[in-house]
Length: 254
Length: 254
DNA sequence: CGTTAAATTGAGATCTTTCAACTACGGTGG
DNA sequence: CCACCGTAGTTGAAAGATCTCAATTTAACG
Image 1 (cartoon, rainbow over the protein chains, first blue to last red):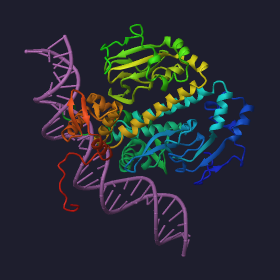
Image 2 (cartoon, each protein chain N blue to C red):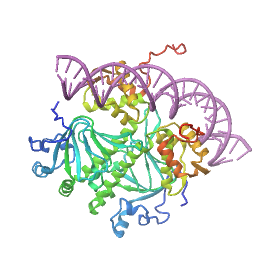
Image 3 (cartoon, chains in turn yellow, green, orange, brown):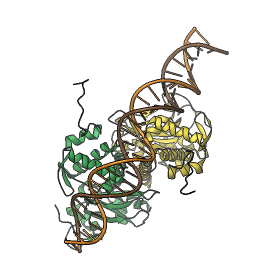
Image 4 (cartoon, chains in turn purple, cyan, red, brown):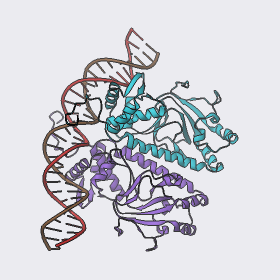
C-alpha cells in the first residue's frame, strides 16, 4: 500500500510534497463537497496533512484546540477511560469520518483519539469550517451528515459489537475489518483493542481469534493479516454458537 | 404530576386546550430557541402536540414520514431489533431531546421509538424546520447541537450502561432514572426494558433489582417508584462488587 | 374476584474472567 | 550474526458471573 512514515509524532507532509486536498479521496464525500476547486485550493491552505504510525495518539480527551480531523486513510479509535482505568472504545473511524467535531462548539474533545493502523489525517481549523459555513450554501448540511454518521457508528458499536456472545462480537468485528479492507483479507488489530471495542477481556479476544483460526474462519495468517472466510464469519456473527466444537452426535435428533 | 391521557393512540391535544409551544418548557433550550415569540407563534401552528401512554409506539423503524419529534415530557426508548428477535435499546430520550432527526435528510427512521413512561411530544414537520433554517440565523447550530446531544447519549449508553458487571449497569441505570427524576425517588422501568438497555436478560435485571431492594439501595418501593440510596447506588455503580453478600470478616485487613 | 402479564426465584448449564505461566516476535546491542 | 529483552499473544484451570428454563408469586385490571 501507500508507504507510511513511521513516526510517533505525526509528520506534517504539507511542505513535503503537494498533497493538497484537491487530490484528497475523501474530499468529494465529505466536508469540502460543493466547493469549487479554485476556492477550495485557497481555503485548504489552512489545513495540515498529518501522517501517523499505528497506535499513535492524535488528541487526548479534554484537550481544547480549535481543530477538527478528517480521516483520509487508516482506522482511528475514539475511547473513554473507565473509572477502573480500563479503556472503552466508543467508535472506530474509517476514511471519510471526522474526529473532534465538538471543537465546532468550542468544547473540549470528548474522547481520546488514537490510530489503530497507520493513518493519514487532515487537521482542519474550526475557523475555516466556519468560513465554509458562510460561503458554501449547503455546507452545514454536510456537517449535519457528519454528525449523523458519527451517531450511526456509535449505535453500530452498541448493537453489533457490544451485544451477544463474545464469539459473535469478534466475528462481527472481523467482518467490519474485512469490509473496511474491501476484500477477503482481514487486518487484525491488537487483542487488547479488540477487547476494548467488544467489552471483553484481552484473553477472551485472543482465545476466540485463535479458535477462529483453528476452525478455518480465518486462514493464511501472515503477521496481522489473515484471509477471512466471510460466509463462515457471517454465520458465526449470527449464531455465535455452532462453532468448532466437535459436535456430539445426538441420539435424539440423529 | 401532570395528568396524562392514557390512550394507546396518541391524543392530539392541539385543539383541546391551548398548549402552544409558547409555553413549551423545552422551547428555549431546543430547536426553537432564538425565534421571536410572534414569529414563533405563527410557525408553530404546524406542530402537533401528542400525548402518549407508557409503552405506546411513536414510530417504527423504516417508516418514512417528514416529521421530527421533540420530547417535552417523559422518557422514550429508541431501539433496534436484533436478528434473533430480541430488542436492543440504543438510546433513551429525555425532555429536550429529539427523535427522528434523520427525517431531515429524507431518510427513513433508523429506530423504533416507544415511550417508556407517559410522555408528551411535539411532532414537527420537516418543512417547518427547513423554513426555520432559512429564517433563523443560528438555527442550524441548534440542529448540530441536537445531533451532538444524541451522539453523547448513544456513547453514554455504551460506556455507562453496556460496560462492566450487570450489577454496575443496573446501578448506573437507576442513577440515570433518579437524575432524570431530579430527586431521590426512582421510577423503575420494566425489567424487560432494563435488560434491553443493559444487554442482560430480564431475569438478571429482576434479580439485581430485588437484591438492591434487599440491601437497601432501593427502599420504600410503591408500585414502580422507589426511594434510591444514591450514594449506595453510586458505590455499586463504581464497584459492582461490594454488595449485600454478608461480608466475611477478613483477618488480614481487620 | 378471576385473568393475564410482569416480576421473582431456583438450580444447573454455559460463558467469561481471572490469574498465572508460557511462547512468539521484533528490535537492539554486542 | 546472534543473544537478549520487552511486548504482545497464547493457553490452562479454577472461580465467578450470567443465562436458561421452569416454576411460582405478585400485581394490574376489568
